[in-house]
Image 1: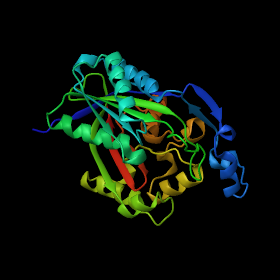
Image 2: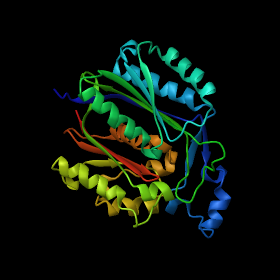
Image 3: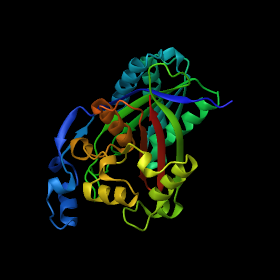
Image 4: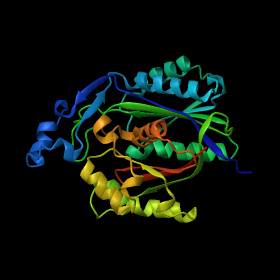
Length: 305
């Protein structure tokens, strides 16, 4: 029998060093490519955060999620680490992750990773964990997102300024201390875009088509969604893509573009957490998390409780 799955303890931690956009590697080159259009307010250029150790950041986010959810670490059956990439040598990565689980106290948990789905990897991990909780296989899953730069990648690109952050949530079969009920999730892959690189123009309909499928099978319209949380890419591009998806400005949450920049897999969860801490809504809301990149798109539909 299918069970409901609940999201509890949503938390995040930003990199320990705050910097401004002009300090980012690649800024001068990107500015030249943009024809010298140095208009920070227009583009949403602001701050970004950098960390010396993304795994330590992930540990702190996971500790916050466990504390907020009041789920004992010993009750976690599976820990999933999601990232756009894990560049380390496996011989170096395994001891780091093993120490992370020991420090958390997740002695009874298995460990899995979610990657290859670009910035959609965290929502992909949540989708799969949701299915395993709903099926009755698992009761408590800790999902940690790691957003940091791969070696050699410039932080400033033609579409986003990249920051470092980690996020974490506990997916549960029990609604105790839960913040949201997970209604549905979907993920799709566009092989042409996956093979040739991310497309930010009208040639790609992946974002819209994925959203259409999710809403149709839940018999919902765009007006039923209270807020949409997605990637923190540069504002003109973000506004163009959101408008193409059919959402009104009042449904969007663009404030973190300039505040923290694009934190890879963590954006939609960070935006959700910030909105929830600021919201004065008294009635239940339908909330949409969406993330895409490199031919991948994932959406997660939540109901506040």
